[in-house]
Amino acid sequence: MSFNIRPTGNIGFTVTGLNEIIRSLDAMNREIPQVRVAVLNEGARFIVNEAKRNVHVVSGRLKASIGIESQGQNSVTVAARTAYAAIENARPGNKVARPKSVGPYGPHDYFTRAITAFQQLFRSRIKVSFDNLWRRHKTA
Image (tube, rainbow, N blue to C red; front, side, top):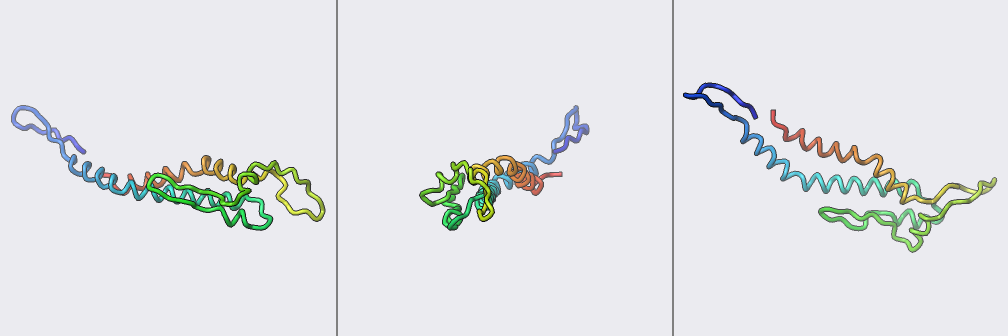
């Protein structure tokens, strides 16, 4: 938007660029639902990958059960679909390293760590997605 001050008889000014701004905002509003769904899906995949990376594997059933359970316009549900998923997440992991034992030896809070990583690392990814939307429709 610009203000060009030039005499128009008495005194006044002309505003130009308002139509371009309105078109840009309309285009952004049309794209926001797609960007929102893409960000939700990317966040869900991030949590799934982090949870699978941190899970304690014995049989592999728990790791295989971690995935995206449902998707909507405003939400995505990530879940581990075994009966012992919550119990495993809450285990303290007090196993002691012995010559023939296999780790991990620390806490088994695979899902909690995935959520914490998401909260710490994903905010900047969300900002980048919406900044790109703004950049695509920015007026000069």
